[in-house]
Length: 451
Image (cartoon, rainbow, N blue to C red):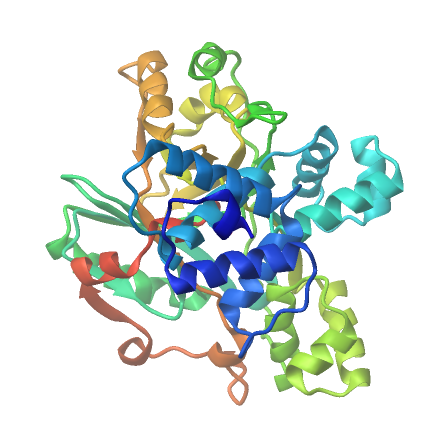
């Protein structure tokens, strides 16, 4: 056993020994003697199945390195769990050239099949299929769905609060981002009925007495990109600050981001439509059988309505790339011309997101750019950006500290009798203290995009 023969002088708690036994047993595909299966065991199974190579051996090696340093009296279950996650995150975040091509083309062509993906990436069908399977098994690549706002009578709005005392809370708010510091910043992504924009603006104006500044911006669908430039085989992600600095202002680029306008038609959805919409948002590739199992609908209803909703593009494909090792997040807000100046360099970063903002009161335009980076590299990127930007450039760069992300539930928010989205400010919106909202957010839940 690893803990009895390989690591001789270290003491393990009973739970730590059990956890090591489980992870090694999963790797060896042994039948486990467990009282019950739960989310933690499911997570361990996913970790063991997606890790490339021997996780048990990597864990043993790391424990031996710790033992050699000396002074460790007890290893707890929490210690072992954090070590397993650290090893796994590094391992599944190193991609082959084939996997990098698949990630790139998956974001470039949302919803394309494996055959088309292989052709665009210059791979064989089997190469592309194996890469997709591994990336999905590790949950690096997920195919979700996104509401098509123009088909649903909805508008997506970004609310920016500077040094706020109060922060809006609502089921219509799906994402919250925090920038800590002496002048904290809060960004809220709201998806709400287009005819209620005026009501939202009234709420934003009321918050100006408790914030340095409060503004609301129309948010375009945006686009995500992947680039493996700084991913080295068998080494992992290494952000080359010097190289990246040389790419800033390499060429001016036009910012092209898709836009959408809400439909003026009255929208009608049956209870079955709403249930299927919510399932497709979670899993865009969900089959009729999977929808039946999740919703209890009949197969004929699930099959027919799923096909209709996809044909009408009520829900559109949304590939999401989440690289576990890339835990830093940087956000830049700038004028379109300024954003174009750094677009070439920005596109070299591992996972990026670009969207356009239009102020709902002044029509002022901004571009928002986000990036996921290796841990500890955010400040270096912001420093490199500052060194190359002119004093006249209108931009701000921030390290995101924490965030939250919720799934918008159409079935819960649509009033089927009135054929309209529910709206009652007293029931659906609340102004909560900044401190409480901030404490609920975690660093590990910062979204990579605002879609």
